[in-house]
Length: 251
Image 1 (cartoon, rainbow, N blue to C red):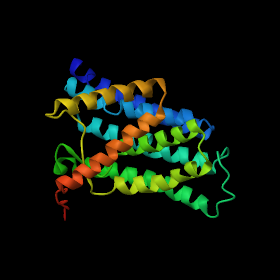
Image 2 (image 1 turned 30 degrees about the vertical axis):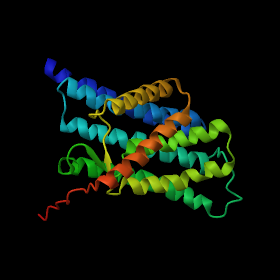
Image 3 (image 1 turned 90 degrees about the vertical axis):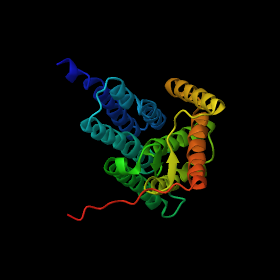
């Protein structure tokens, strides 16, 4: 019985993330867009907690991996898409689309494509994780994609930037959606042989967690997420890392 209870902890953490994702969706549909974005960012901070708990408790399982994937779809795929739809074409839109012909269609395309590509990205990762090997992502992770959308939204709102900055959100989501299903190589964050680089990584992780928990400085969180995304893409291209060929079962 004790061995079985080890599996409860990581799955319970996954359930917390699912609950926060649903909370973000509820907040978005009620017009609390900032609260919804912070709820998604809290899910980002919890993203590795279930996996870490599973490894420490030696409770990793196929069930847990699938559960985590479904949680990521809700929190980093559907929730940001819902925030976009509710903010621009919902009952309480934050800007008027009347002055922008056909922009409503861009909003729908951005939100739908972001959620769909997030699902494709997660499905690909689940099926091909062993073939793709350790140490690299191929395609932008859903976690960082959802974080960029929410951090950008919060930063624009915090500084009261003109409406074109907010109007860029759906177009940004289209770009991130395409990155998620791309084959670009991105290194996973971890400790390296460089002490200086490890110090930079640890300091930034501490700041990101601190700012995310107390809900301040979304601009710093945006900066950290974008730097990671850009530097990782450039590093993968410079290293010339290519994903292994995908083996298709013909049976």
